[in-house]
Image (cartoon, rainbow, N blue to C red; front, side, top):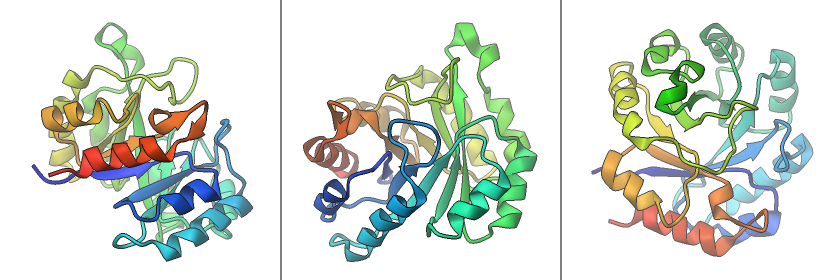
Length: 226
């Protein structure tokens, strides 16, 4: 099984980021959508500047999380924030994703799809959805369906639904990330059972709503263990 890549999302605190510099991270995420983890472009730029001093391999790439942004909003933020990835977490269409790729060729475009439980499958995005995104995105992220918003619920979806998405993602050459309810105590179960390309965590490495370096370290170590 290939080693999964890991993304720690929702970073806000420069001291926490500094304390992560010895970890083998692949991506760090900054939220620009409405959220308690939202950061301003100015603050995100300050945080990303810290990546230059990474002590464990290459610095992680910086992803920005957006929900239904306009192209103007993306242009404004990308003019000041050196993001490597634009992660779209709303109801962005495949055509919109193509427009983002065309307008900002310097960034990868990731699309998050919400996965509903089987009894609510019509509300979520089934594996058939991937066909329209082929060629429009650089990676796919599966998250737990949230009928009231765009995810961030801190709970898992039915992991047995992953293989159907993996098959389609593989057909279209899309790396597949899994998010939603991950934490240090369940991430090995996910990796051993389904071997996604990558994992994305936010609330699962927090204590009292703040990023916890002990939990971050434990999560990364369990992803990267041989």
